[in-house]
Every structure is written in C-alpha cells, then in structure tokens.
Length: 202
Image (cartoon, rainbow, N blue to C red; front, side, top):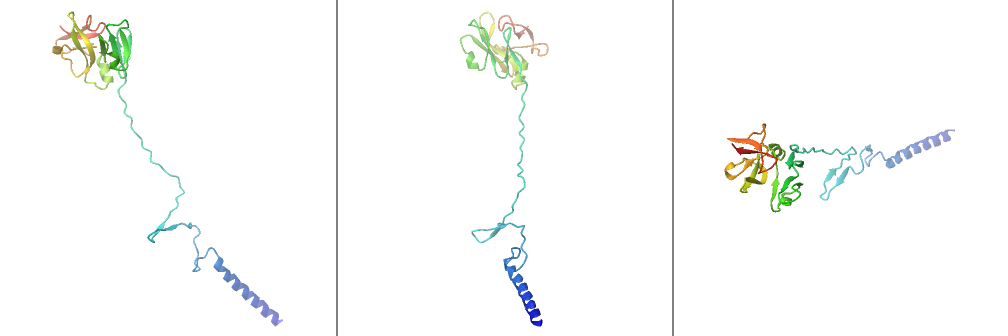
C-alpha cells in the first residue's frame, strides 16, 4: 500500500514538471517567461538599414481629406445691344454689325473680324447698360465717326472712358437716365445711326 502511494506521488510530481516544461511553448510568454502583449502586431517595429528601429503605428480609421472651396467670381449680368430696329445682341458674347452695303443690314456676330467688309459698322454697345455688362461701368457708349458730306456717320461704336466731340465722337444710347454732357442734347439720329438716340450739340 505504501509502495502504491509512493508511485502516485512520483507520477503527480512528474506531471507537474511536464506541465511546467510546456511553458516553453506558450505563445503568451516571451523567452524570459514574461507575458507578451498579443495586441501589438508583429511588425510594430521595423529595423532600418542603420540598425535603428522605427515604430510602426497601424491606423485603420477612415482617411479624412481636406475639402477646398474655390470662390467662383460672379460677373455683372448680361444686357442687350440694340441692333437695328428689331434685333438685339448679347453685350457679353456678341457685337452688332451694321452692313451698310448689304441687303442684310443688321446682324449679330461673335467677333469683330466678322464685321470688316466695306461699309460695315461694328457696334459693341448701344447704351451705358452694355458697358456695365462688359465690366467697364464708368465708361460711356461712344461712336467714332467719319464725315460723309451729309453728317458724321458712325464708323464704329464701343465703350470708352469719354466721348470727344472735337474728334468727331458722339455718345450713343443717351436717355433721361443717361443724359448728354455739356451743351449737348439727346435726340434720335436721322443720319449717323438711324434709330438710335445720340448726343448732339445744341
């Protein structure tokens, strides 16, 4: 009986030693027997060529990108150029062409080069409102002219800082809201630009 008890004690002791010997295979212990933090990834540190070690931090969170808002400038609203008795053209994208030597006398064109035939008169404005639309709110609508023997007929019309009567220029598109300067008066043209209001000397 004593012999069996002794064998049982030895077997129990051997089991404990075997269990302790298995600690070498425990993945939760390092070589020194200290617990290992399993939450740290294996590649938490990366050796560098110079022997230094760089910590690598994993970031599984969403990538937040900066959103840049660009202010788009808003220009003045468009207006209409009077182009003869019935047509109007965009003051921002077109000009009116008066074909004085053609059957089709009035036409909206996209570029002044489309209005350079003999006798053509490019009209880039017909009132001060058109100058505002074109971003030159302080300008006035002026006509350059040539003397035909009957009157000073317009050769071109555009927004300019001032109209100089001494050089044959006159204001186009005058009204009670946009009166003529100096001793000039606003009246309907009968020769220079038929159908347009212009400023003439009194």
